[in-house]
Image 1 (tube, helix red, strand yellow):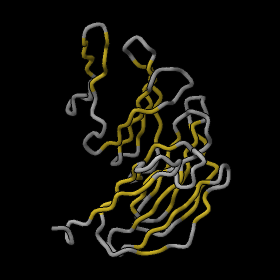
Image 2 (tube, rainbow, N blue to C red):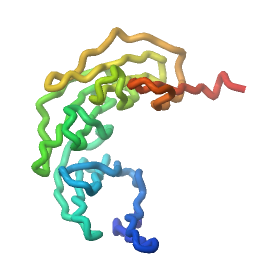
Image 3 (cartoon, one colour):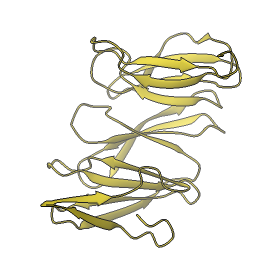
Image 4 (cartoon, rainbow, N blue to C red):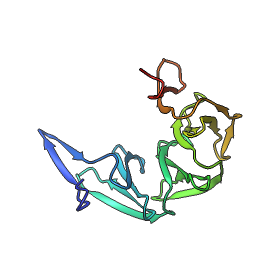
Length: 195
């Protein structure tokens, strides 16, 4: 995608057509997402400054149909799977207020927002599978004070959060799968204490 013109570019490689795009666009959220129950990945973009979002539905011929909407500006938007239906849902969190929503993909080109609440402010959020059930959970870490919390997703009923704990401040947190169990793990790194 050309960041100035917002135009997509198709790149042909042999017989395979690949869509060239930036995963994260300047001041936008962009990610491959599955918005419809078909075999073709769709593209979701969110403009954090304006609150506008767009789903580009891949029609398998190299072009896209589009659905647009808007949320408030300044949400942190992360792809998730909150109900196991193979459609991409989103976790929305606003650092300044602590407000959150599960935006559940309803399969009809839109989202439902039945699950919402408020956590503390200033968290960094990470979508992970914390309890091995295949449903997205959220790990919270406050970079400034080192407090963290694990919140397991409860389908249709928000989250069940364990008591918060703390590390020292300023850790970089990287979710990943380190071993062969069904739980996501964390790689944490602190440049200030490493040689």
